[in-house]
Image 1 (cartoon, rainbow, N blue to C red):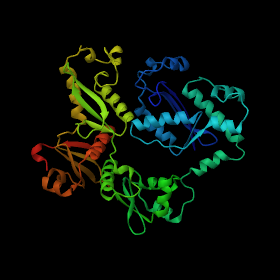
Image 2: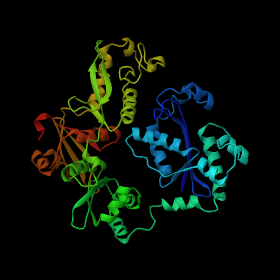
Image 3: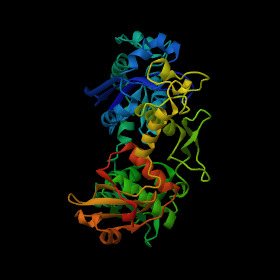
Image 4: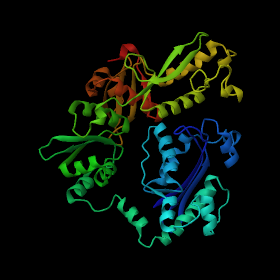
Length: 459
């Protein structure tokens, strides 16, 4: 299965481009079986030369969905597919960067129709999509728009499949198919693995744990481990003797348990995750005019942080959403450098805190609303979510802003009765990594409910 796509962007500095339009056609090698296309609000200005090239301008995108609103659909339509694009390296980089900003690893095999055409149809005067399709008699409409270019790429790919007499394209597809032949012991481990969220442990023959991982679907993740060709995966495939696992009911507890277990057991193939997983943080200060300012800065244990992020792109994307959702000023959140008004003020979406038109009291109230909603500093609360069984629930305890541990329960009285609650909580270590995991998860996911605890009821 192939996901044939085209992306239009804002232009600008490398890795700072934003997507303005995307079109994806799911192609089974014979026909299109699904399709998706949409304009996308890039939350940044489009370069003038791009407007002239594509005809897409800022006004057209003002009410378009943000990338995070279409991300799920993109994941669905590309599931199990090799990504095909004309200059695939560019399109894949843009998509990977956007998903990185959301904290999601978008990892796909790619095929580039430029490279395939150069090999299968040598001697053409140009391999740009417009000129190549014209020379091959392939119709193309809406040039430099995602849907038109993606459809032209579909027709070009069909032609390339026909010209691929050595079946190199199909061979690549089969080579990346996770169902290719595996050693019997690996197949047995996959067969016995659950399809639910949890933490898994890979053991040598003597029982030593060599790798710890977590997944929303353990069976699927083991399949990825055992079909991967990278160096670490190959070494694990040779050394592994057995896999054990613990179900967690949801991804949040899986992440917390994985982090704790890796720090305690230090498996040989988990070197990267022994280190801190966050690199940037969101901080706050009051400026000379009395306004609360938010700023992204490098993570520093010596400084207080509102929340933390894995990378700068994720931090910036999150701050754009925070600014929009709470009606904040781009200048006061550090997203728009200016000595006067911010960009949102120019389009009448900022109340003027950037030029002191709005009072600090009114503006700061919205900043405090954000802090109240997303920060759990000094809070006492329970995070309730799905459990390991249908009738079971999980509970995470936060006391005075510190992560105390998690447990599972079947009846509400188990979390309303302090003695019982104390008995079901498995104590865990609070550190910057666990704070990052919880902040990051609550920022991007819904849990069943959050129950505030009065201080006198805290454990």
